[in-house]
Amino acid sequence: MPTKYVVVLGSLMSGLGKGVVTASILRILNFYDYNAIPIKFDGYLNFDCGTMNPYQHGEVFVLDDKSEVDMDFGIYERFLGKSLTGDLSITGGKLFGTIISKERHGGYLGETVQIIPHLTDQIIKNVESIADVKKPDVIVIEVGGTVGDIENSYFIEAMRQLSLKHEVVFINLTYLPTLDVVGEQKTKPAQIGFRLLLQDGIRSNFIICRTVSTLLEGTKEKLALFANLGKDRIIDDQDQPTIYNLPLHFMELGFDKLLIRELGLRHSAPNAVKMRLWKNNVKRVVSPRGEVNIALVGKYTNLKDSYASVKESIIHAASKNDVKPNITWVESSDFEGPNKDYSMFKKIDGIIVTGGFGNRGTEGMINIIEHARKNKIPYLGLCLGMQLMAVEYARNVAGLSGANSAEFDPNAKNKIIVLLDSQKQITDKGGTMRLGAQECLLVDKNSIAHAAYKADLISERHRHRYEFNNEYADILKKKGLKITGVTKDRKLVEFIEWSSGFGIGTQSHPELKSRFEAPAPLFLSFIAAANKNHAKG
Image (cartoon, rainbow, N blue to C red; front, top):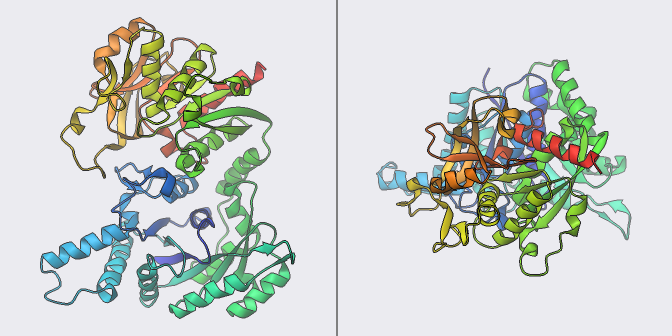
């Protein structure tokens, strides 16, 4: 069977949740046992997300194959429950780089190279190549940006051309505002978005309407009339109790059967086992028996998307522990200086210190880590959170004055964290860190890490340039710090732990492999420890 295509476009405004809608469509097709994979178009001219500021773009998501991609890939993987590859991320930077390289090598035989047909042909070639190699039943393509943007206009044109060669279903995600002064859902902005697509030669097969409350029948009828669609093609995308309920919500509306029929796929019932497991997980998220209070400490907490994977990993692990996670976002820089107030942590059951780059806020992180250790609050350090856990221990337990990371103080008396040897000659920033899936040996069978993973050899994803300085391993171990995980060649430290209580740091980013149906093992153990702490009162 030739690969079918679904193209998801956003109109009117950004931030509507195209990634969640795309992931929900992927999940619905998975419920029906179709092999569906995503492709994401991003119009920016960066080669990838590797050098982007979290405040501008949210977190950088890292795949097993070392690709640094848009955070929407995290949503796809969490919904699909499987790992994806970097070729599914197609950026403007990658495309223009390919076109220019080909032109410099005479690949166009003297032609004047233009957006149409050369760039659009390259986009279609990339898409068709993925279909030929991976052979999925359906490719769901999310076009980043908003209809009308210059940045994604050539992607939209390429999708129009794709539909001339293949079966393509177009889905337009739009927003229906409700104005307090009139109290009705307004369709005019959605109509304008639909007409903009018509001007581009694309007629939407479905319009998904993002709303705060239920999509009203009158609104649906009005929009269907102006869009020249059946009323059943206007799909309600109202706020959900959890994003993981959206596939079920769409199926309750009959969208699954309409979509499958539109794609020309065989009409069958969804897999009952998959549906039951998903519904049970959603139920635990929406109606848990207990609760747990987690402090998420970071440097970019003003933009929650900077830690999207950490947040979702907490939700995944909490649902398996049948508790609701009450997350308190803590800006680490607030805990620097002389007037630090730790009273907020009296009601906190567990503390996570996340990754990040640069010196700002790191002393605040160290102070919070010390507070967690002294007060036996379950602690999980991720990447930078592990490095600063080692620095805090060196300063306050081992008595090593001036202990720090060479990243923050190149002249530190005791450099507990140093630049990886493989990084010392590197000048380029993009795609040059220690990235992707890396194997790790868990060397202590009595450790938190081994209890969590229940294995001697594991694999987690990484994204860092600095490492624990092995010159300090014996000094810190004598003072009670445990090194419980190392790289397969035993050259780099991967896990450290406190000798008492639940305190663990990992150089990896286990949040990047957490799935809704298969939470990250380390997060499961952390939430379980936090839940025990909560029970103590």
